[in-house]
Image 1 (cartoon, rainbow, N blue to C red):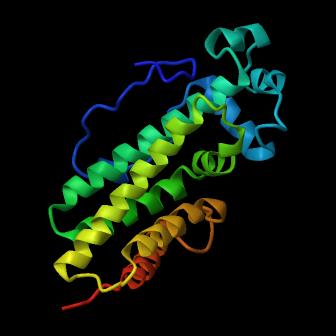
Image 2: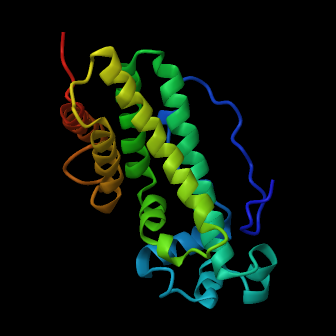
Length: 215
């Protein structure tokens, strides 16, 4: 299936249990890795195709052989980013089982881990929506909406089950997702706060936002 971004979508194969927590280096084609580094440093509009080609050790015609425009590089990068994010969130929710509280903790952890370990991709995805062409922007926003719906549905289910007491489940779900996404703007893997401690603290905050009621 073509993404309209100069490449073919490849859906990830089924992963072993807990694989959504595992992160290595991003598996990006060299042109996309070069584009990511440039976009993260100086923004889409501040980056030239010539610079991306140089970072990828390619000529400009060689780069265009793989990606016909700077826009196709951005779209290809964001499509891969969202495919990875959504697959990890879905796997986390499925593994958590049917209880809303466990699903909530799992999707929050998954979102936090993604925005820690894929912070450059997440940052570019959040800041460069304005740079997307009109033909792709609705698809990308659809991906983001799909992720938000996962959180919404879990929070509403938790309220219905009596686990969450918030009077504003839609607003609470949006606040939780925004908190997780915001990690990409400040977290550093070599900082004073480690990933597991950040997850523990933010899970407490997320539960407070939805009014988690302990038994």
